Amino acid sequence: MITRDAAFELLKKHNKELFHIQHAITVEEVMKWFAYKLNYSDNAEHWGIVGLLHDIDFEEYPDEHCFKAPELLKAGGIDDDIIHSVCSHGYGITVGCGKTIDVEPTHEMEKVLFAVDELTGLIGAAALMRPSKSTKDMELKSLKKKYKSKGFAAGCSREVIERGADQLGWNLNQLLELTLQAMSECEDEINAKMKVA
Image (cartoon, rainbow, N blue to C red; front, side, top):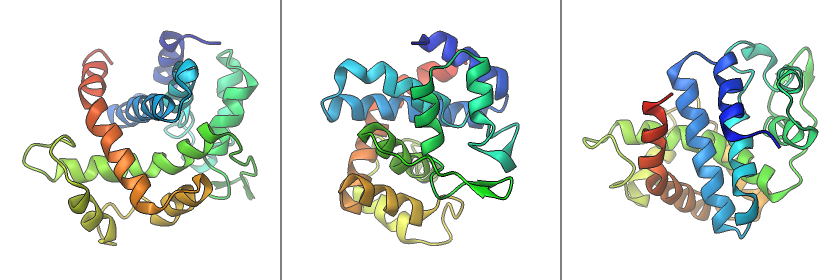
């Protein structure tokens, strides 16, 4: 399996915007958190790398998101199982080249990625609205209020988040609470990794 350092270099080869790099690192850390939470601790690094690389093609090929990823990942020496997982987060959502991604999330890891990708963006946007700019002092009720406001972080699809919760067999509250907890507990590590990005 590719090392985290090599995966990060591959990410930076195709992503220059700090916003995209921060999102990748955030999803990486949240995925690792969930690996430990859901008793996949032996595979936490793998979960993290999938999170880190999930949007590998988005900056350069926004109209072919998840369609270009296999080519970029294969060129970077990435295994087929990671490629499958990366593509699965666009299942039924990403449309490009006149087609829709049909790689279904099957493993629990892939379902978590599908569920938290958009949600981490929404939680991050909610944190920026706070005086502290942090998730550490954010309460679930505050997040739920932002979530219900259709105009807030409108680019973060509530439909996709709810579909992700359904795929995991969780209710929405459970997904919101766990992802907020993950981001809060990972915030220092995310900030530390961004300083050397």
